[in-house]
Amino acid sequence: MTETKNIDIWTNRIKAIRELLPEATTFMEKSGVPKISDSLALSVSMLWVDAAGKDQLIFTALNDIQKHFLTENEFDDIETVRGVEPFMSEDDLSSSFYCLWTLVWDGFKGISIKLSTTSSGYSPVMSIKCHSEGSEIVLLAVDDDKIFLKCLGDCFLAETSLIL
Image 1 (cartoon, one colour):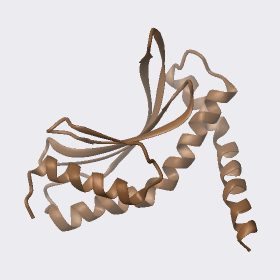
Image 2 (image 1 turned 90 degrees about the horizontal axis):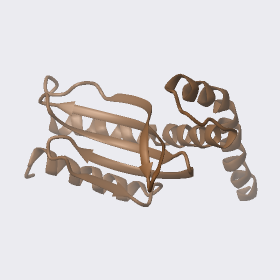
Image 3 (image 1 turned 180 degrees about the vertical axis):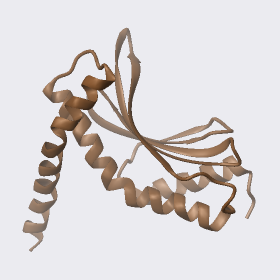
Image 4 (image 1 turned 60 degrees about the vertical axis):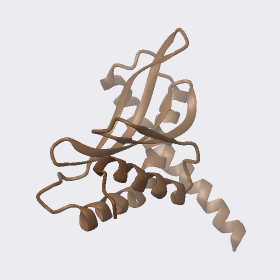
């Protein structure tokens, strides 16, 4: 039973990544990425699959913040974005691909969660940024939900100066 479950995990992941390859290539073309390759499309597809796997955790956490700490008229809807931006690595200009979840309240306060990778190969990085304070927490353990939730809570406290 465990063996089949383990095989399902990676075979389902491979299937999901392969299904996104054409969309990833089109996205890069429309975004003006200078050097599009099959391996780069693979990295972008992997990022998107990983981001989809994080959706429930992130949306639940941000919705909990809205529900328990903010009044309804204080916040905007949670915004999600797939994007690409230039990235300088040593003397080489490359691309950084990202998935971003953002919750804004009081017009200028907010939290952004970013899952990103660069065009040099798939190596996901997750970060949580406080808007008004400007601080950013980079999570090295991308798959550790407890660390993510702890850091999200820390960022929210820093952003609101809220003392519970």
